[in-house]
Amino acid sequence: MGPFFALERLNSHRAFKSTAQFAPGYRGFESDMSESWAISSFLPFLLTLFLTGGVFTKTFETPYTPRTYDAIWATLNDTLGGRLQVLRPWAAVCYVDDPLYDPVQCQIILANYTNDTARKDIPSALLWTNWESCGYDNGCALNYFNPQPVSGATCYQGTTPSYSIAILSAEDASNVVKWATANNVKLTIKNTGHDYLGRSSGPDTLQVFTHYLKNVVYVASFVPQGLLAAPVPAVTIGGGAQLEEIYTVLEEYNVSAVLGGCLTVGAAGGFIQGGGHSILSPAYGLAVDNLLEVQIVTADGVIRTINAVQDSDLFWAVRGGGAGSWGIIVSITVAALPPTAISISSLTIEPNATQDLQTLGTNFIALLGKYQNQIMNSGVTSFTAFIAEIYSLGFLWPAEQASVSMLYPLFDEIRALSSNYTILSNFTQESMYSSISAAILEDVGPNMNSIDFYGGSVVLASRFVPHSMLESPETIQSVAEAVWEGIQIVTAPMEDDPNGVFNPQISAALFGEMPTATKHQVNDTGANPGFYDAAWHVAYAGAWTVGTNQSTYRSLTQAVHNAVGPLTALGLTGSYQNEGSAWETHWKEAFFGYKYDQLLQIKQKYDPDNFFTTYKVCREVENDEVD
Image (cartoon, rainbow, N blue to C red; front, top):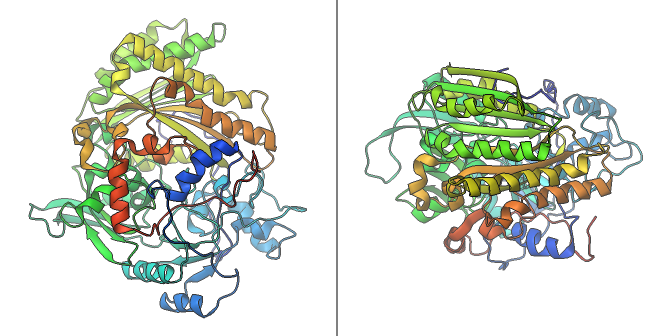
C-alpha cells in the first residue's frame, strides 16, 4: 500500500469467487425531505436529467409484467442473441420470505457483498445500496458490516430495472434504442454502477448493460474522422472499460492519459460526461479537454462518430454536459500523453486536543488555502480529508512539472505550529512511481477502494471554491470558516455513534485537482464553467448501512445536503455533478452554470422527445414527507 491518503484501511475486500449467473437485481430513489424541497429540487433534476426543459413530449410506458416475455420483448431478445434478462435485486436470494430465496446462492452473495468486482459485474447491483432503494428501507439491502440472510422482511424491487439487455456493439445499442422508442420503453444505462446520483438505475425500465464493451486499443497515429490534422497518439476505450483495465494498457504502451483515480469508474460513461477530473488535471486539464472523438447512439438510433468537425455541437455537449442525456456511448478516444513519473507526498496531522478544535481546524484550512493556488498552478494535485480529529493530506504531481521544494513553505509553516498540530506521519518521494498508471494501480486506486464502502449507502454534496477566493487573507478565512462549519453540520448526526452509521468516516474532503492548465478553454466544452475557475472542490459525505433508524437516516442525509450551505452563503454555488447532491436546489446553476441554455438547445435538437433521461423517483410526492 502506498503512502497517498494516509488512511487506515477501513474495509476488507474479498475476492469474488463465483462463476454463477446472477440475473436478480437494480434500484430507485425517493426523497425523505420536505415536499417543497423534493418537488423544487429532486424531481425536476431527475425528471429532466438536467436537460429537458421540464416538459415531456412523450410518455414512456413501464415494461410488461416482470418474469414474462410477450412477443414484443421476445423480438428484442431474439435480435440481441438471447441476452435479455429479468432482474430482481441481487440480494433477493438472501431474503428468506422472497420467492427467489436460495441458501446456496445466498452464501456466495454474503461472501462478496462488499466486493466491488462482484457488484460491478452484476446488472442488478450498484456500488452503493441507497441508489438501489426507493427511499428509506424500501430496497433489498444487507448489512454492510455483517451481511446475513434476512428473515421477516420484504425484498422490494426498489430502483432495480425490470429487465436488462447486455450490448456488445454499436449495432446492438442502435437496435435497443430503435426497439425502445418504437415501444415506448424507458432505458437506463449501467456499466459499473459507480454513480453518486443513482443515474445507473431506474424502476420500471429496461437497463442497457454496457459492461462488456471492454476494448482498450492504443493507436499510435490517430486522426479524428473527417478532420484534416496531423495524427496524434491516442487510446480508444470501450463504453464498458474500467480504469483498472485502461491503466493496464497505458502501462503496456508507456503512455499517460487524463483519467480518474478510482478503479471502479468506467471512463466512457458518467465520468467523461461530467467533465472528469484527474491527478493530471492541474498539468493537462480535464478528461474532456483531452477527448478527441466519441462513438454514440442517439435517440433516433443513429450510430454517430462525433468530434470537432462531425456533429460538433453534440461533441461539445457530451464533454461535460450531463451523464445519460445524450445517448449510449459505445466508445471514446482520448489523447495519449507522454509518459511521466509521479512524485508523491503525504502527511497525517492531529490537532492539539487541549486547544479549541474549531479554531485549529479553521486555521489549518486557511493555511492550506494560502498555498493552494500556487500549488495547483505548479501542476500539483492536492487532497485533504477530515476524519474525526485527523487531517490527512496528499500531494501528487508529474515529476517534470515541479520539485518537492515547491511544498516546503507550507511544510515549514506546519512545523512552526508544532504546539498546535502534531505530524503523525510524513512521507515524501520524488518520482516514486514510474508512471501515472503505476501510481493509480498500486496506490491511489486501492486506497480509494478501501474508503468507498461498496455495499453501504453514501450521499454527497459539494461546492467549487474559485481561485479568487484564495487570493486574500480575508476571503481565505471566510472560506475556511465556511468549510469548517460544513464539517460540523455533517458530523453532528454522528456524535452519539448511532447504529448503522459509518464512524469514523471522511466527513469532508478538499480536492485540488482542477484544470489550471486549460482554464482558458472554459468555453471549448460543455463542462461546468465553475470547474475551470476552481482551486478546490469541497465535498461532504455521509455513509450508513442497514440498521440505521429512519430518524438518523433523515438527519444524516439532511446534514450532508445542508453542509454546503455556509459556502453557498458566500456566493459559491457551483458543484461537480458527479460528486454533488441529488437534492441540489438550484441544479441548473450548480451543475452547468451559464452553459445550461446552450446545452438545452442541443438536447432539443438531438433528442426532441426527451428519450434519454434519468428519471428515478418511485412515486408521486403527496405528503409533506416521503418515506
